[in-house]
Image (tube, rainbow, N blue to C red; front, top):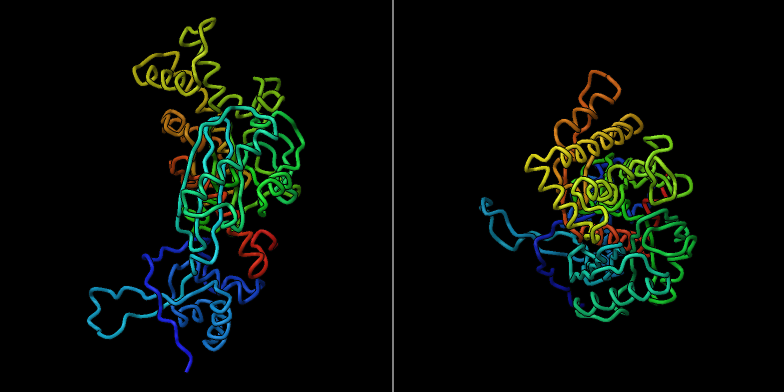
Length: 423
C-alpha cells in the first residue's frame, strides 16, 4: 500500500485574494475557481468548496486531487474550536502549499524603494527598503532593481533563481499589458520597454503596473477590499494616483492608462504639473505642490532647499499651532481633493473610497470640512455618499500590491485565465 502523506501543520491560515460571493461566477475554469476559493479561505473543507461553488463533492475531490498532485494545494490540519467538545483527530482542510512558489514585489519610487518576498500562500518571507536617488537613467534604475531583488531574496534564504516571478510598480503612465512606461517621474527618459528590459536583466518573468494600481491590488488581495466587489483607492504622496476595482477586478481602461486622477484638470491654465501640463489635481494636492507653497509661507525663498518631507513636517506643525498661512495651504489642498473625490463618486459610485499614502498623515487633507465639501459636490440622490476610510499600511503596502501582481501571473501560468482577462 502506498504511503499516505500526513496533513501538514501550518501557521493559522488567513487566506488572501478576492473573497468572491459563492456561485457568483461560472465562466472561469472550474479547477481555477476551486483553487481561488481555497486561496481566499486560507483553509477550507472539500465539502464547503462544493457547497460554495454549487458542484458535486465528487468533482471537488477529483479536481483538488489534481491540484495536490501538481503541488499547488495541500491538506492542512485546522485547530479545533475550544468550545467544540468532540474528540479524535483534528479536522482536515485544504490550503495553498506555500512552498510551491515564491514571488517578489518591488516598488520603485523617487524617495524610497521597497521590496517584499511572499510564498505561494501569501506569507511574507522577507522585506527590504533602500533610499532612492531621485530621477535615474533607465540602466541605473534596472541595476537598482536587480540589487533590491537580490537583497530581499537573500534575506528570504534563497538566491534570485529561487523566485518564480517579479511584480514591479512605478509611478507614472504605465501600460500593464505591454510592460511599457510612457512616462515616469523616476525615470529620465520617456517611452521605455521597462518590463522586457527588467526580464532580460533578472532572468525572471516580470509584470509591471502603475504604483497606484498596486495599492488597489494590495487592498483587494490582502486588505479591506477583499470582501468588496467595487471600491476605489486614492493615493496621495509625491503625486496623486487612483486604483479602481469593479466586480473584484482592477480596471485599467482600454489602453491600460486609465484612472489617472492626479491628472484630471481642476483649473484651466493653472499651476504647472510635473507631467508638463497645467491645472492637474496633483499640482494642488501632492507633496511637491504643498512644498512649493510652504517655501513661501515659511519665508524660505532664497534660502537653502530643505528636503520635501522636512518642509512639510514644519508646515504641518505650523498649521497645528494655528499659523494662518499654513492652515490656508492645507485647507486649499483639501478643497481641491474634495473636487477630485466628488468626481470619482459621480463617475463610478464606489461603495468605498480608501485614502492611502504618506500624505494622509496630514489630517487637514481629510478633515470634516474637506469631506463636507465633497458631499456638497456629489450629485444629490438623497442617499448617503460612499464611505471614506484612511489606511496607512506603510511602505510595504506597495510591495504587497506588486507581489499580488506576481502571484496573479504565476497562478495564471499554472492554472488558467487571469481575472484581469475576464470581461
